[in-house]
Structures are given as structure tokens and as C-alpha cells.
Length: 135
Length: 253
Image (cartoon, rainbow over all chains, first blue to last red):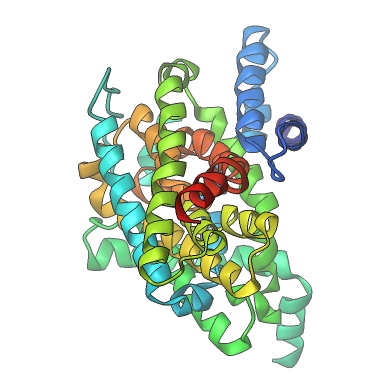
């Protein structure tokens, strides 16, 4: 049943956000600390466990994969409600701080991703259809 | 016609699904016809989203872009924190646990650099523009970390509301730059594997910026980046009003 998958996902989400809030209070951060990350780890663990005991039929997976695929549309909706006007009105302090901060971070990313044991590149893809088939 | 717009306004979330679907289709066509697939459809869709947000902001004079037009209020729900985080968590279903574990430590390192470097840059730029007060420098510096760390830090150390607006603006501009620029510099960043996606998540900050940027680069990288980026705001909110503020105060007063 599709709803089982969505329910597992929802349970991981709620528990993760709750633990993130608790962690935030515990260390006095006044914000949710890693709630989404904790929820993601819970889902990964749940997946490994359920697959091991053959309790993850295709339909259940579908209840999770649907929401994963809705991610990009949600990001488009998120972009459509950013406060772009204020961002542009912030003036040069905001623009320069943001640009220099991102430029420096980009250099750090370039350096870090080329040091140590480099990750193996994912196989190339052309279209979303290729991903769908790969699934 | 009036009846139809009423239906759209009353069924906000469903309308939003249709609107985003149309934007996505349009972007995919543009990607294929105008750029021969060189610019990803999702990157164009995000740009269109930002453009519509600007339009909404100008028309209504409010804060939430297109979502402030009652016809498109569902965009606010669909693109709000709940759906965003729920769908991000769902992407974790495709994560290879072994890949994620291998990059764990470097992700933590990236998080710390990604908090301290933008803070120093923001505070320095603020200083050179004449904001010599440690509270102002800290608030703007924190905004350069993420647009949530800025106001949270500002509120904690007692900054004025125009400083908070400035720090939010800094963070939003950074997030937008991350979204827009990343796909073009993906090769320079080495952004083609789970490990570098996690480094990117720690350094570029904000779940929204990181995940939109990765979505536009290669959507399979989204969960890895988001897994790390989700700790970014928390770490910033922790360090901003404490260590970073005290350090700034010590150095500049």
C-alpha cells in the first residue's frame, strides 16, 4: 500500500524534526539543529532494516519515491516566494558580502573536493527519463 | 472568469501544483529548444520562480513573492518549509549509506569553514562600509552565513530591525547566487560525486540554496548535499550570538 511508504516517511520526518528541536534546546541554539538530517538518517536506517526483512514491496517504495520526485517542483515553488525585492534593495553591503562569501566558499569547495580520497563520479545522465529507467 | 479565479484561489495548493507543472514544462521546452539541453530545465524553472517572486513582491509590496497574490497563495504552502523538508527527507531514500559514511568527517570540516568564512567576510565588508559597531558587524556577518542565522543572531544580541533586514537581504542574495551560479561552475567545484556534494552542502549553506543548486546540477546529488546543509543553520545559530559575537566584540571595541 502506497500510504505505508508515505506514513514511514512522515514518521521519520516528525521524529527527526522533534529530535532536532530537542538538540537545539539542549545546546541553546534557538533553532532546529539538523532535524532534517536526523530524519534522513532515520529513513536510510528504516530502508536498510525493512529491505533486510523483505517488508518493503514496490508499492510502499512508491509512497516514498513520489515525494522524492516532487522535490524539484517544490523548490520551484520555494523560489517563487523568496523576498527578491528586499534582496535587491539591500544595497551594496548585502551584494558584496554575499558575493565574496560565496566566491571564497566556492574556492574552498574546489580545494576540498580535490583533496583526500576523491569520490567516484556518478555515471552521466542526459534526461530525466534515464533516471526513471535507472530506478 | 470571476468564478474561475475564485475556484483557483479557494483551492490554493492544487492550483500551485498546476502552476508549477506549467512552469516546469515551459522550462523543459526552453532548455531543449533554446539551449540544446545545455542548461538544465530545473535551473530555468528556478530562475522563472525567482522572476515571478520579484513580480509578486513589486505588485503586492509584501514579503512572500508570488505567494502574496491571493490567486497563488498555494505556492506559499507548496514551497513552504514543511513541504520542502518533507520532500528533502524523501530524497534520502536514494542515498547510498556507504557513500554518505565515507564523507562524514569532511562534511563536518566543511560546515565549520562554511560558517566562519562567510561570517568574517560579512563582518569585514560591513566594517569597510562604516558599520563599526560589533552588534552591526555580527548581524551582517551572520546574515552572510544564512538568512536565518542573521535575524536569529541579530535578535539575540539586540540589533535594530533595519540591520536585521540588511542581514536577511545578505543571506537571501547569497542563497540566490548559490542557486543560480552553481550549475555553471559545477566543473570548477568538482561537483560530480556524493562526496563533493556533501562538501558543497557544508560550505555553501542554506538548505534552500544548496538543494536548489544541486537540483539544477544533478538531482541525484540533492540528498547528499541536503544531509549536511541541514546542520548549517543550526550551527550558525549556535555560533553567531556566542563565539562569533564575543570574538567580534573582543576585536572591535
